[in-house]
Amino acid sequence: MDSLGKMVAKRVALGLTTLIVISLLIFLGVELLPGDVAETILGQSALPETVEAFRRELKLDLPPHIRYFTWLGDFFQGDFGNSLANKRPVAQQIGWRFANTMFLAAAAAVIAVPLAIILGILAALYRNSLFDRFISVVTLSTISFPEFFVAYILIALLSVEIILFPSISNINEQMSFLEKIHAIFLPCMTLTLVVVAHMMRQTRAAIINIMASPFIEMARLKGIKRARIIVLHALPNALSPVINVVAINLAYLVVGVVVVEVVFVYPGLGQLLVDSVSKRDIPVVQASGLIFAAIYIGLNLLADVLSIISNPRLRNPK
Amino acid sequence: MAFFKLLRQSPLSARIGLAIILINVFAAIFVPFIAPYSETEIVGDVWISASIDHFLGTDHLGRDLFTRLLYGARNTIAIAFVTTLLSFLIGTISGFFAATLGGWTDLTMSRIVDIMMAFPTLIFALMVLSVTGTSVPALIVVIALLDSTRVYRLSRAVAMDIEVMEYVEAARLRGERIWWLMRHEILPNAMPPLVAEFGLRFCFVFLFIAALSFLGLGIQPPMADWGGMVRENAGGISFGIFKGLWPAGAIAFLTVGVNLIIDWFLHIASGLKD
Image 1 (cartoon, rainbow over the protein chains, first blue to last red):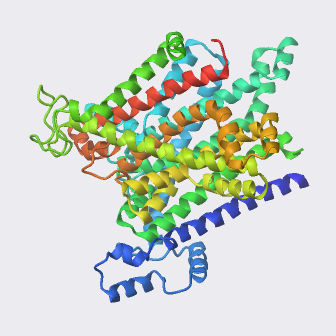
Image 2 (tube, rainbow over the protein chains, first blue to last red):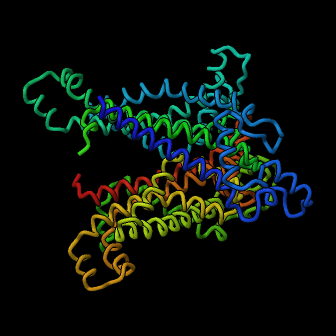
């Protein structure tokens, strides 16, 4: 499988290039600021000495290319610099928040992925039935609703009207696994609802697409049983698009987490990013932005690689 | 008129969608005449329940919620609309340029767009806004630039198909300039897919701005806007005060309306009969 390895390597290289360009963009974003970050953040009335000290702290006195490589080098060694707001190392703040975000996203994914695939396949098989219509109306409205609307409706129903789950998902290390699950139940459900809608619609479309292809019709004309057609003929071919859909939606999930974390005051990376943006805490924004970008690009890369592996046709580009 | 004929044949869902949009646009334009109070006027106690004087009660500062909702329609829709327009202006012009010029221009622009699209929009916007600050013009320009990448993709693809037509070739041989080609040959033929895309992009931009405002990084108070109003009134939810659901519902309402219209439009454009 030499060609396969080569193709995968090519995609990985492309992903890495994108990531490097983005890190450059993130870095340059601060650079292109009219005037100077130091002056912008400290305000017009800041003393020259304060501005100077601040500039040294951000290493703004060094030339840009040196700063970029130091920043990137430090980043890969896990040193993200110090926060401007509380002077603590960024890595320390990001560490457990990152774990929390991953925990929430993973919990949502574990529920959402199987649910979406099963619903998508069922909707495709019983196309235009009452079940399909119902599912499609529900998912279409969940897609149209902003995440926070879904979140607040869930809070109103399950946290205020019937007190089942907390509306503020505060978790800490002392909590047991079950307590954590209980705490994150509502944000997890919000994410699940939003992602299932997207994923299920795309799965449905992929399956319908395959069921309409000539080889399925051929199998049907040969008189093969419906279950056999689905399992042996349709499923292997549907695997590639479905895997793709899942990976892309997982990438969406990791980003979609930002709004949901803010709604439920969940101590995750998204909440930190939003807080830091409003405080203009540039090092934290840069670091968490780069982490989000890396995950997003990584998952999209995974989608590409998995679909190459699961679909032999993609291995031989014309 | 062709439009009314089309409307008579339209399905119920499209009519509902149209009604929703008309209600919102009407509210947005005529707010000063229909709103019972002014945008930032404090009219009573905090979180009063609904009454004859205050249709939806008051918000977290004692401002009339119904009035704020109407002004919110004006601000949110206007900003989203301007952003979408700007995004289309940038996206279509650059997309058409890439398609007609081809070669290096096309390659460079497409690679830049690829990279921008490989980065989650929300994170990108948050990072840029942390640098530019959250004024309304910055918000419009940043979101329009980010969103124009999708418009670029579509308009480039559409223009590529048109560009190889004989009439474009003829105009080229006539010695017409690029700008003329884009304006008179490509644009009119690229209209239908672009119009449908406009609706989709508007929805996206509208939800995006609402999300940013909800995060406190979009339209800033005291200006009324739906996303921000959800944020402001969210604190009441744990006490069983569901005021925040009104603006959130308004956002969902308008998005569903626009989506219904797009579905109908795509249906007509695709030429399907049922």
